Image: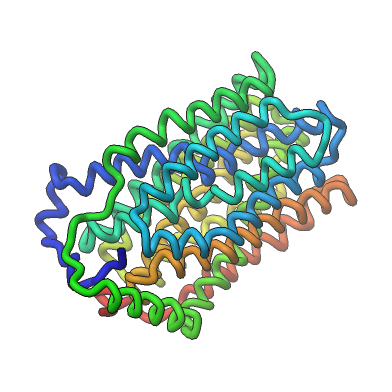
Length: 415
């Protein structure tokens, strides 16, 4: 069912009350995102990179291609999921996607030496990935929040931040003690336990009148087509392309990069968890700032640390240096997760939010799939990541600067 902005006019005092039912939706969405694709698959991938290479004799580029395939499928399927979310109750999309994701992730524990099996599973995880991540849950929040939307989005996205803190440590601990197969099985089961119950109970659109569904459908179609003709949309896409390729490329190789420099696997997992903690902090800070200041300026300030963190990795040869770089990268990464959906709600028709958000994910995922492969290829050819890290660091700085080309956000989404 389409959203009519005038039908979800909420009182600021109502949203500020923690007994407001919308915050239960936030909690359920928080847990779902914590166990979803953007947290579980992305943040634990580098933990499994070396074990899979050692087990099957695959190169790092070969294993990284699995990440790339999953990311590409997220990009291909996100617009379709977005269109479905703009027209169907969100639970009808989220629950089956989360079930398939959890079972598919667990099935990697049964992986054999056939590379096609690994790639096919990654493809499947990518197909349902955004149905169990930010895209699906953000759509529901728009029906519950107006004045506190920035903080609501931040708390939901914080699920990925908390997941990125604890999941790499859990994954590395299980891999070290019992092997990578059991790690995949346990993490897949965790996704089902954390994601399904709360989503089933609480994640639904706020009840609202919708007197003319056909008019709403026409409004939705006009909105997303107008969005594609807007320079604002393409500035947002350019920011995503540069930031995604750089941050996700570094993230997929982060653990391997640090252990190559003599840092123990446990230390690399700790640094990865600190990256997740910084991502959580970046999400919460960005959410608070977005409700108070102009979003383009917030975006510029909050994305810059990612550039500094990637450049710091060039010289990071100790655990302390690796942790410092992780903190900077995580701050920028976390802020981006809040900023993009917030900008879309302010610049474009809410009836087409999920469609446009899904389209931005297409570009985001394509870049996310390319970044890890570029780093893997560079390492396989040169034995070092340093040259490509310099390029990626400046690319993130360019992405931050592009946000200043966006106009001031209106107080309300356009009617």
